[in-house]
Image (cartoon, rainbow, N blue to C red):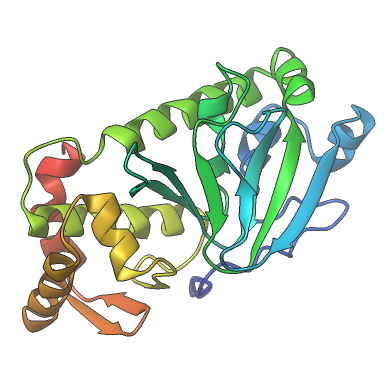
Length: 247
């Protein structure tokens, strides 16, 4: 029996009253704990679907009050801060199934801005509610800790003296693995972020990003058509990314 084809870029409206959405950030943890969607409804876990947010629309801004965890249900979100000179510093990109705003837990206010890069739909989980439920569901509590750990890990990913090729390879392999974890194609996806945003995030000049893309295409590592990208040689990209990903 052939494996089902991987889904292309994420479309998350595939859940119903009995099944979790494929991009749910907490479904695996809840199911591991023996709770399906009907059981969670009986426990009064309220999930608020919000959006759609249009491209360029802010989801929250630095200093806004934090009271809910927002999981991306569909689309891509960019987080950033502005430095003292007003320059934008990109902190990360969040895909379906990933959670934004975790860094706000300690202070109770968001320490960054979050903006939609395309059409974004979110699932808002009341933080007091999910924190109380996590105390009763060990699997859910462990998932919250994993999400916090991943958020810290993303921030430290590129804090090193790496070449432009290494940084770009790590970025592409990271995206590939994150898409694969949600059942989407690990080799064909869309870069919803601009080249300028990618350069900012990787701490490279925009010209360097363009040169790396051309070099990777010439070396038959990737194929690029505007924002659509195909990874042609994942193994070679993984070798390039090894130092950055600490593998």
